[in-house]
Image (tube, rainbow, N blue to C red; front, side):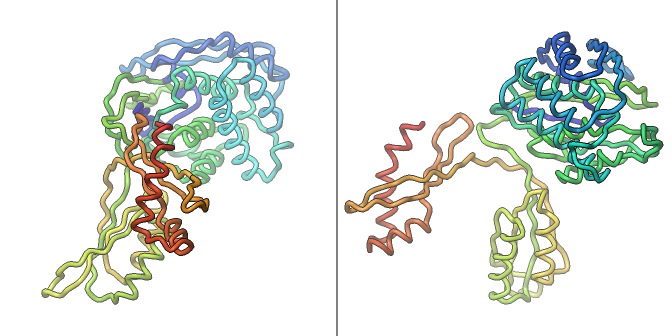
Length: 413
């Protein structure tokens, strides 16, 4: 499995840093065509030139993007920006996946700005976000990701983003980092961030909009990866004692399975009834737990008890933790973050005939990332329904259904 890790924990992320890092990673992009396409797509742009070079930031060699602009318009509506991006993407010729990604990025920005200013996107007046360099960043990043083939068969991880601290100056006057639009984008996708480590704005709305639309899974430490290439993208500012760079690590996953981080929550219980435990399991699954099990154990003073063990993802961790404490009354929960590998799965709906009667059966099909068939299992509830209708025992029915669907599935391998 191909893996991309976006490390924005040091100096944040911006659109130009991301594009520079992708070019530094080896992405191929016709910058002249990109600049001409943006210029033709945006009314009022007299001159636009995009260039790429390698610079040094605190000793680091990093890609740097420079955009020269002569623009007669000081603001544009959200609809104008969106239409200009559509034209640009058509002009530079990117894949359907790249177009979907780029439009997702601009819509994320416009929705955040619309919410903050209380105006509809069609009439929303934008200043910095309507500049031609925003379109250069979004369209350029989409095309660069396309050239690296990262929209297909790749898992993208991202670190928590450093947003800086203190005040910085904008068209609207002084603001406190993170900027309102940046914070709204992070909030809307529940993407983790941290303050510092330098003063000023380290994460821009464009940068975080790209991040939340690209990252499949935020992680607090780098994922298990065999690194093949590393790309650095430089920001324009010189930060005291801090290399202002974004780092991308491209490589391979070690196994043909999907890698992810999960949280294991455990607590010992010796004063909870079986009825309460049964109800707790149901409530935990409804609150977002991925798995729940109850293990018999011996607790303090040789009392019989249980270990309640729950697996949850970061996105539902707080709800699951709150459910455990509220429903069991426990005074403490152990939380362990751990990697795990899972087999990619899908549910197919197949029709099979038994005794000249046709039935619909859902079949869970699991394959590794190389497409190899790992496991096939008919859904128990469907077998139960068919068993009630035909009188055939579920155990026998499972074998019959498996024999019927095996040939169909093997043709798909």
